Structures are given as C-alpha cells and as structure tokens.
Image (cartoon, helix red, strand yellow):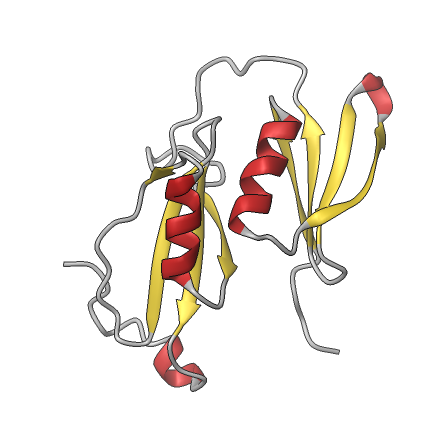
Length: 144
C-alpha cells in the first residue's frame, strides 16, 4: 500500500470562511460530511474522495495569536499539489486573498502561498517535472 496523508484536522474560528478559501484554491473540494461533535462544536469534512481537511469550530481564543514561522511549535502551513500555480494565484487574488509567496526560482517546482481570512498560511506547489530526483532536489537554491 502506498503511504499518503488521508486528512488533517484543523480548529478554525470561521468554518464557512475556511471552506470558501479552500474551494477557491481547490475547486474540486466539496463538503463530504458535517455535524456537531462533542462539546457542541460544528465540524465539517471538506475535500475530495481521496483527501480532506477536517475543520472543527474553535470555541475559545488562544492565549496569544499564532504567528507562522515565529519559532514556536505549531503548523506553519499545509501544502497542496496543484496542476497550475499561476491560475490558482489569479483565482485567489481575484477573490481578495493575500498572497504571502516568497520568491522561488526552483526549475522543477513553482510554489505560491496565500493567507486565509484567519491568517493561516497555505502553500500550493506545481511540479514541473515527473522525475522525483528533480522535484525533490533541495541542493538547487529555491529562494534568492
């Protein structure tokens, strides 16, 4: 059996806004299931038949806001492979989402990043080669 990530579970303040963000970025995503979980919080599974995100309604404020890449433990971003990073970027900008991409010059992958309305950072990567050695070559400077 091939190893793959089945899902990730995220607590978010605005489930519907997160669903809208994901469906702009990944139009194939649909609501697979939803309900009310323990403690009365809403949950939604949004994705495809093969992969999904479990979104759980956050009911409390954190002690301090999460800041990705600030050195504290936590999730900096989730990355999704896409067929066309430029088209995704145009769709996200047209929908008013903030582009948080850093310049990346890797010859075999193109990456774009966007913040959702809650400030979470999301990566979308388009591979420009089917050769795993090229796609996963980290010796090539990606950012300059």
